[in-house]
Length: 104
Image (cartoon, rainbow, N blue to C red; front, side):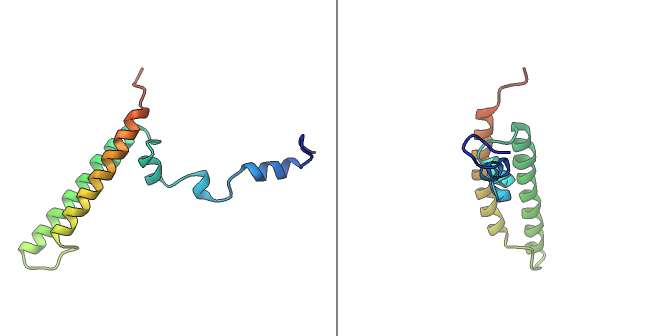
């Protein structure tokens, strides 16, 4: 079987279908940044869940430092990483909200 330009149907499908998994399904972080994920997922899972995770890591590192033990990482490093996370997730939530059409 052939298409209008004379190529086979399989060749036509091969040209149109991306070869790499990243081209077919970009990483979830990329989809979140582009605002392609639902707003509830971006806000609650990535935003709230990520910030709570950083808060727990920071508390654990501060407790370890106060007890004179070596923690997972210095508290200042976790704090600055959480600030970077906040900037990135804020942009993702903003873009996702731009695509939100409401519950109705």
